[in-house]
Amino acid sequence: MKLEGVYLPVTTPFDASRGELDLDGFARNLDAWGRYPVAGYVIAGSTGEAPLLTEAEIVALTARARDEVGESAAVLTGTGLESTRATIRLGREAAAAGARALLVRPPSYYRGRMTPEALRVHFLEVADASPVPILLYHVPKFVPVGLEPDLVAELAGHDNIIGIKDSSGDIHGLGALCTACADRATVLVGAGTHLYSGLEIGAAGGIVAVGLLAPEATTGLYQAWRDGRGSEAGRIQERIGPPHKRVVGTAGVPGIKHALDLLGRVGGRPRSPLISPSEAVRAEVAEALVAAGLIERDMATGG
Image 1 (spheres, rainbow, N blue to C red):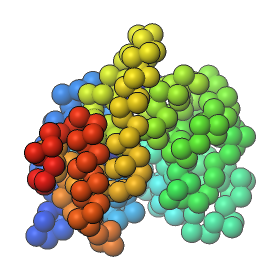
Image 2: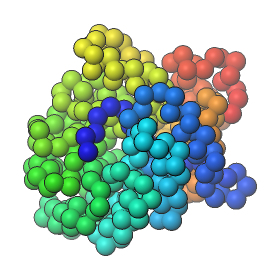
Image 3: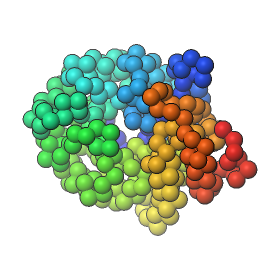
Image 4: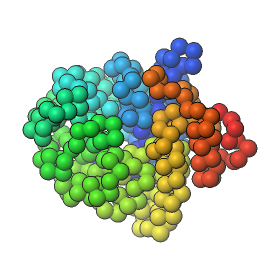
């Protein structure tokens, strides 16, 4: 499986009255994003509130996504849990539900014991047992266990480990991962501020939450870069950088969901213990969308 292009780490809508999965709203969002040349969707990533979902919910979201997108795009599912055994079990269930690849973060509860050797054994056991390919997930903002380039290079030698998503936001670290993976595995950018620069230094695409808000611009950036129109890709990066910083980076999942409401998508409330954004944050999110040309000013009070 070759990963390239723009993948969207989708949010998880919940029913307003009961807080259960809103699978119909989820499907409507997929239909709207599917109007653009999106390479695939990541279910149960950080933006999808993965730690707040049950395993059954992750499988249900995967199945619904597979039903909605068919063969038009790839479905990747986040299956990283704290134990190797549970990660393998959830991965098999997600694959059976239609996931074409699995996004697996490092275990972190026993952080001090997560040595390179422990992580190597964990990921190799998961890869050996998985019926579909594995994409490593480096997200130190949320999971304080690093995946160092030397370890990634070793893991990339496994036939069932196809790459890594780097959400560190560190362009130098991203470059080191691109060098470590070389021709053996794919590197995907996880920070919307570095999509263009990441492509320039060797990444094959990105899994970027700003693409949920600006799918036309984000996929357009990738296509411009692929076609050799670097100046155009750079200009698009300048447009999507600010909403990434102001909404994704600062307001987080609650802010992204509010932005989706303003854009006419299904956002809604996050799941507890996350709380809905304050009025000040809502105003900042709205202003970020207006400044980026994603909504008109008279729409900024909606949602």
